[in-house]
Image 1 (cartoon, one colour):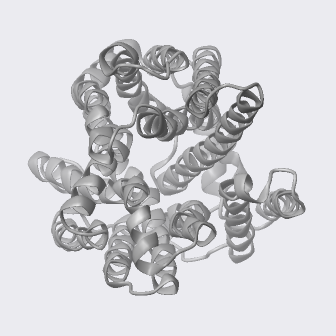
Image 2 (cartoon, helix red, strand yellow):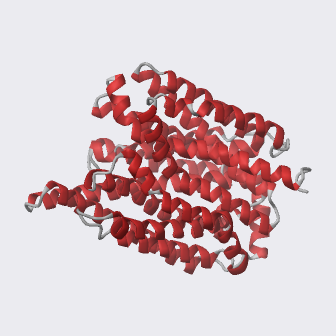
Image 3 (cartoon, rainbow, N blue to C red):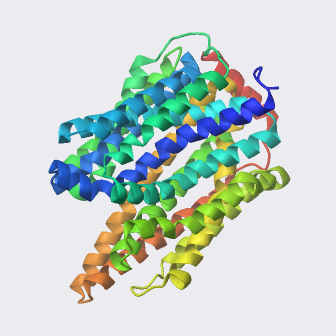
Length: 483
C-alpha cells in the first residue's frame, strides 16, 4: 500500500499517467509530418509556418519550471488534471482552426498545458512508487514513453494525414484527453500541496521570461542568423534575466527554486548529463528523419516504420531489463553504458552514405540507439529525482524536464547549423546537392556522438555509486527551511 491505494490501482494509475504523457510527447513530432498540408490549407508562408512548431516549443519550454513548482504548492494531482484539460481543449481548437492566428494561439496554449503535465507527472510517479524495485520498474515505463513517443508520432502523423487530414492529428487527442482526465480523477489519490500557497512571483516571472527568450532565440537561430542582432540580444537578455532570477532566489523567504537543491550532487550531475543526452537524441531523431526523407527518398510512413526497431528495443529494456540493471548495478554503470552504446550508434550514422541501404546503413545504428536509450533513460531520471524530498519532487521534475528541453533545442540548433555549414562548403567544392546534404548530416551525427560520449564520461566519473545519506539529509533540511 502506498498513499492509501493498493498495488493494482497504483499500476493502473501509472498506465493512465503515461498515456497522458504520451499524448504530450507525441505532439512534439506528430505535427512535423503534417506541416506541408497545414501550409497549403491555411496559406502559411515558409517564414510563418515555423510558428506552428515554435509557439508550442516557446510556452512548453518556458513554463516547465513554473509548472513543477505549482504542483508542489497546490498539489500534483490538481495541476496534472488542469494541464490535461488545457491541452485537450487547445487540441480541439487546433483541430477546428480555420486561420493561421487561431492555430498558432491554440498551439501556444497546448504548450502551456503540456508543460504542466510533463512537469508534475514524474513527481506523481515518484510519490506513488516509493519502494526502490517498483520505482525502477515504474520509471522504466515512463522512460519508454518519453524516449519512444517521438518516433510513434512520426508514424501516427503520417497515417492520419494520409488517411484523413491534418486536422485529425489534433482531434485524436480529444478522446484520449477525456479518458485520461476521467481515469486519473478516479485513480490518483488526493493530496495537499506543500502546506502554504506562497508563490515567488518575481522569481517565476524572471525565469519563465528567461526560458521563453532562450527557447525563441535557439529555435529561431538558424532562420534569423546566429550572429544577428536579434539572436544575440535575446540570448543576452535571457542570461541577464537568469542572473536576476538567481539573485531573487537567494534573497526571498519562499523561493521558486531553493538553491540548496543544487547542493544535491545527483541533481546537478543528472541535469548536466541530461542536457548532453538530449542534444544527442534530438540530433539523432530529427536529422535521421531528414536523412531518410531527403537523401534516401523515404515517404513519411516509411520513416515512421524505420524507427520501429529502435522503439521495440527501447520497449524491451525500458519495460523491465533496465530496472533489473539498476537494481543489480546501481544508477551509474547502466547510465554510462547506455550513453556509450548510443554514442556508438550515432557514430555509425556518421558514415551513412548517399546510396545507403536500410539493413546495412540504418538498422545497426537504430538498434544501438534503441538499446542505449532503453538502458540510460531510466537511471538518468532516477538520478535526477532519487535524493529529492517528496515536497520538492515537482520542482526537481520541472528542472530535469527543462534541462532536456533546453539541451535538445540548443543541441539540435547547433548541429543543424553545423550540418548546413558543412553542406554549403561541399556544394562550393563542386559535389552534388544530394552528396552535400549527406555530408552535412554526417557531420551532425558525429557531433551528436560526441555529445553522447561526453555525457557517458561525465556520468561515469561524477555520479556517485550510491547516495550519501548525510549529505542528502543536510541538503533536504536546507530545502525544508526555505518553505
